[in-house]
Amino acid sequence: MKHRLVLFTLTVLACFWLPSTASAIRPMGTTMTGVVQSVDHSTRWITFEQDGGRVRQFVYSEWARFWHAEVEPLPAHLKPGMRVQINLHSPLFGPDFVRQIVLLAPSLKP
Picture: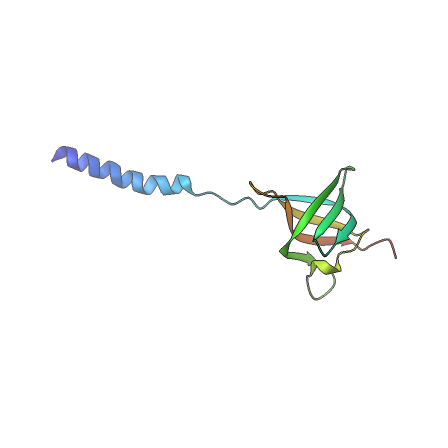
């Protein structure tokens, strides 16, 4: 009987302890600032020059939001030359993609 009580106690402790260690916070990605070099809205590719000179290419997701002065937060308003801050998600599988774009300065090009 004593062994059953010990086994039951260990089982209950394991049931409460294991789920708490298994929980994880999903990473939201990396925030970068820089200037948009080119945008292809048909394929959703962005060529982005990061502060520091590194040029990178990303795809923006279908649900990406572009926060700027317009009412609708659509990435279709994104233009080359705009200084933006992006939230880049690097998944375990597949290409890096952008979830959120925030306008820091409008395009200097007309």
